[in-house]
Amino acid sequence: MSVGLGLLVGFLAARLLLKGGTEGGLMTAPALERANYRGRRVPTAAGVIIVLSVLVVEAGRAILGAAGVGDLTGLTIARNAVLFACLGFGFLGLIDDLVAHGDDRGFRGHLRALASGRITTGAIKLFGGGGIAVLLVASPGFRSGARLIVDAVIIALAANLGNLFDRAPGRVLKVSLLAYVPLAIVCGTGAVGVALAPVMGAALGLLVDDLRERLMIGDTGANLLGGVLGLGAVLQLGEDARYILLALLVALNLASEFWSFSTFIDRVPPLRALDRWGRRRPPAPDRDPTS
Image (cartoon, rainbow, N blue to C red; front, side, top):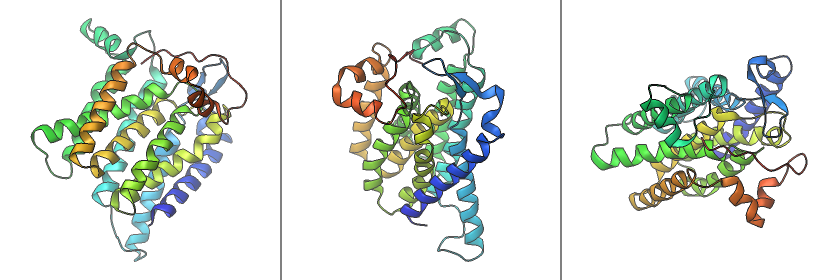
């Protein structure tokens, strides 16, 4: 399957699953209804549609391969890793979407809660995401020393950064799709590019509904997209590029502990225009509790 076809089938799978899920299906469940940043009640955790879309696409590819259609009869290492990242990071985000409560925010807030004997959903994401990142890096064959640590930290911080951008309709999807463009160029038509394509096609399939406030992808989607893009970078980029990316991710994650991304975006006209493009109407100021 080519990259273009992967994007297309990911997009179509997401649209079909979303249509079925919003017509008396999954996304209409009362347990998923939450107030968005403007106080409107909408279904959250719609990022689960991305997980299901990737499952459908990969299962379909495997069945077609077994039937002799295409060049590959099974999952490649890259596709297997991306699928595991979708399941793992999506699951951690879903826990947060369904049962998060309390006012603990940011690394400091979750670590303070843990020190006092309370395990927050944010702490589950923090340490669970680190565990998933380590397994992803080690799964193709153990990477020892600094390489394993650096690559795992990149994936975990990328997943957390996805959560930090999920503060306004469509924002994290826009950021993820924009970040995907240079990565897709670097990946080309190789195995990593093919593995990422259905995920990003499914993300594109949710963009309009997120912008129009018909759903929220929630931490399920934000955590997943950040983790998958971090994984793609780890699988594809050279050593120097990964160290540069690590420094950028550390800086952005630390900055979020002290400054609001929403405030910064709103003060820079080009970023503000891009952030608000496609929304249903000009929003009230974003509420931006860092988490």
